[in-house]
Length: 80
Image 1 (tube, one colour):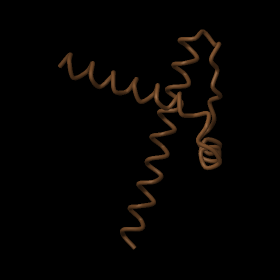
Image 2 (cartoon, helix red, strand yellow):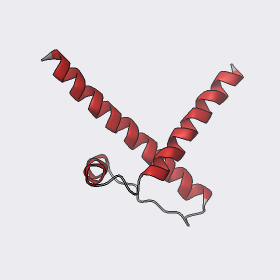
Image 3 (cartoon, one colour):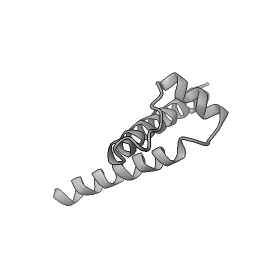
Image 4 (cartoon, helix red, strand yellow):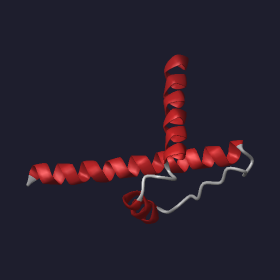
């Protein structure tokens, strides 16, 4: 039962991080393109439903969000 509990928590945590990356990436793309590239920013429950239906449409913002956080961590590491 403990393994199942950890598996469910891991999956929820993965979706939460993916949601964070998507929202960050969509926001960055919207700001940098001055609104021309406007990916919709969904709520968490709507994001989970869309993610289960299809993998299209949220890949680019997620990649931009991941790159942003990697660069942020690298910058912090360099400055320390």
